[in-house]
Image (tube, rainbow, N blue to C red; front, side, top):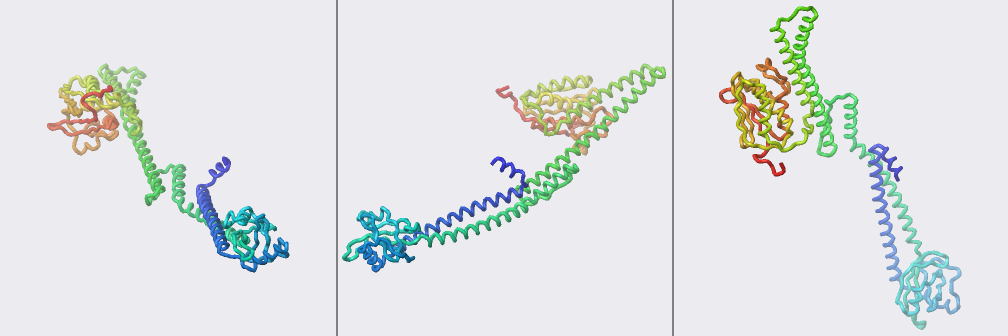
Length: 469
């Protein structure tokens, strides 16, 4: 059985489906044929029994059997083949057979009828030659002879012949049905699996050429159409992911080129000074070293942002836990004050507890505050507020963002034309948006009344910590 199952698994799917259909039809046809044969046999036997019950032995045949008993002859010579065999059964099991009949073996039930314990009996028996017969024995009043047990028998050959012909016919019909079912199953399998063949060719084409633009026509609502649509969605997602990856690499290369070029120029100036022995003026050397340090800092920040964005958008953001948003805001504010010591930061924080990854959330808030520090003029104020409803707002008094640029602020590497001269990679707000979305929240930027920009962050949570915290 195991080897058969292993061989079946090696067959093509359409062959297995055709075999399955043929097997199912064969079982159904075989069951129907057997049931038909059994019902026909039962019907024929019932009709034979009714015929025996309704048939009375002719008086002359019974009288002939009595005469033979009187002469001491128990079997006819030679026997003929009449429509029915007639014989008289004695109380001791003896029999008197009519001249044209074949002797039939007496059964105990026949003796019971002869002794008067039974009125009649119906059973199978055989002739002395072994031919099967159906026997009906009953008590009959025969004038001077009194009541006698008369057995009327009919050969079962007529039923067996009909049943044999029916069995041959059913076998032929069943065989033709199975062959037809196999052919129909193969045709159905080929027709039904044609879309699967197309899908297989498409998958092989994609694997061979890496062409993710291929689409499979999907018509209807069946499983094949759903599979085709799922394949199209998968290839579209893969193509989009590959395009985003290529765009990320291209944008990263573009962004890395500027600080690397500036850094290389500064290093070359320092190296040329060392090689030629011409010292750089102290003021210029100090400015040069400050520029090198700034470029190194920008490179480190850009590389960190790229590492953060290298995680897939659907990746597990890490174990979420209940954290105090107001506490994380205070920690981020400490870092923001170091980066903008000449700025005034006005803070109003209400307790708010959210479920998030603490490190990622703090990094996102630092990016938001860094933007506010970067675009604020010297001596200006930054207003940070966390309301009792959990909305965190960060407002600066900088130049603000033009309305036509607001839809692009969360795109990777996008930078406002007015901010290209400032340090940064254009990845900060993209990281913030993804982190906030992973916590189930949302972020938006809008122009503030009187100038500046307001960053509004809403993260689902509660004003009081849960009992498990």
